[in-house]
Length: 377
Length: 206
Image: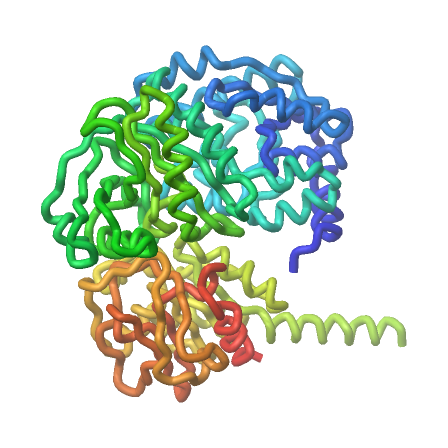
């Protein structure tokens, strides 16, 4: 059974035996990477150099918030690599292409930092769900290399240390609290490495990225303190076509409902396999609010639908951006439930999002994991 | 004397490890590693096993096995399952099948499978017989599912323990030959009574 005392005793002994000259720790300010850097620092002391990349896909004011919460804990160096990431990723459309390109730029940049500092190791916060999802072919997490058979010393010129690779998020949080890492970090909601680039769903443009960044701030503010595990916004073009077959699948539940299919695709996991399938919008009045949370089992069983969104607000029939609110409850992020949030609360969040002229409509994703994944890409 | 007692203690440790470790056959499914974690949280020991391990070495090392999920479809992908079909038929101790493991047990003992009733996410499971692995779970509960294939008819000699609206065989058992199985995932946090079910099985192993 996992206890922080045993874990730290074992892992620091193992790290001390590796003969590390110096190691660069890739820190994002999240609980996994911060805790892995802290654990490694216990063994390596000053031979650990923690760095934070500003990829351009972080949330509003995120880098300054991270640096201030890590003050006195980790002397972190901020490296601005926005231009490299934008150059490589703007205009990419496919979810896996975005993730693989992000991984490429990330490790090439890291490799340069390792070389510049005369180091030989990289420390990263990979945890069990990262390599399980990547090796299972569900989606490529950017921080999984060794488990895919990629030899980092040959490809990138550094050895890889992943002290938390067999832990789950809830265990990492126990460890982080034990290490007295501030609660702003230990209780922080997960944020993927490729960040907003995979929440600006479909073709990545600067405008869509900024709409996503703005919407994320609002959703995070409005839905905080509700006991959610992860809550955010995603945005894509509000281009849809009605689907009669899918509409007929929900009409027996509520005669007013219609189902549209968006032009973008979303990632799901069905029967342990990846599905990069349709994202659908259910429109119309519900006789009972709880019905919204049962739409997924009508629309995702036996179809290639991965995300079901229920519409909350709309300006014009089409044009502009659609923003999806995502809010889930989970401990270990292997499965996730969509809690029945209050309807008037969600409608008021939608109204606030609609203050942005670029946003044409807003909905709530009502799909658990499985069959969806928590993120859209 | 001191040396003798140390030796004796080591011998006891070796025996107790053998007695308590549960082998978890790893098909690379999403929750295989999580089963090991849950069993450890419950105070049992578990080890992930490659399905190409020969049966005789598993029989020596473990008292019981869990055969879990993966992205394969039964029966067409059976050639990809290594020795797992052989474990199902010949492993001497109890086996718990989960998801794909449930379908494999049903198929190997002559049950019928179908692919018309997939289920994903939360599903209500209703108990038909609160026996063996389902002892202490009440009349119904929410379980987490992720399957395209399902068991339409249980093999002869198996009793159906639970069903859902769409799937008639959510759980089944044949205690006489030590085979137990569930379509849903007791190892994931969102399945109510998942820990009770894993414990019920793990206690059959000692």
